[in-house]
Image (cartoon, rainbow over all chains, first blue to last red; front, side):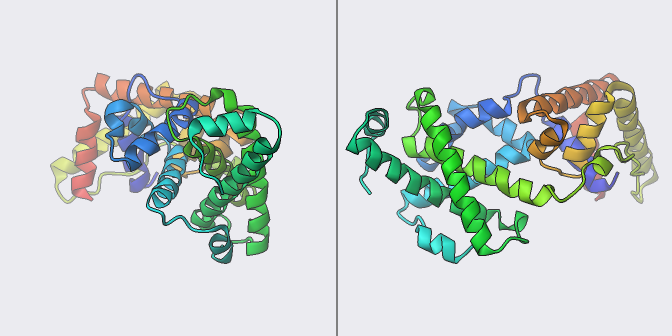
Length: 89
Length: 214
């Protein structure tokens, strides 16, 4: 095991809680969390376990990051069009 | 496209007729945009695919997301914008598809059955005392993995944590699901944490020991 792998494991173990959200529970809370975050409305105070799951789960973290960016762009009126997106694939 | 409130979306999608057809067409456009955006952001997973293939993949993902949204409409509780809720399905579907495109060509058996779950990193600090503490910590982690984790947990740890194979790809390989694999890993982390605490080792202190040295 390489040093970065050891550190990754230790970080995950250090942040381990007895009770954690499942991926399904995270998926259900994801749209609410993202809307609160985009609105600047303290999502971690309302959904305290959500961020801890993201720290543990890269797959859910990726979904959160892309959804958050997409919704933020839309809220700012800067959402790319379908044609723009097709052109830049 | 017509802008709708949450209630207007639900009403239009549940009722038949022209309003429903228009709402479905708009929803399809929203979901396609979200799927295209996701595949663009996950382009590193699909670098072997051309734009045409990727465009078709986005269409398929949007259709799959649309089916999920319509089937699960009754589960929408109004705690977010309806569109954010719907986008969640498109982002999820497109990311699962992108990861599958990347990992489907990589055999996971050698990752799961390798012998790399046991820490071999020796302390490499110039300070002999710190080096001894690092070696003690590594030995304790090795003992925790070997003594307290099942073979399945060791395989999951090796694949997901060390080799960074996506959770859903390992779950798919095992015929399992994301929730079950996350729980398997959560139990493994708890066992390791308890083992280290029982040995009088604080995980954050161990991390500092290596972080400072690195």
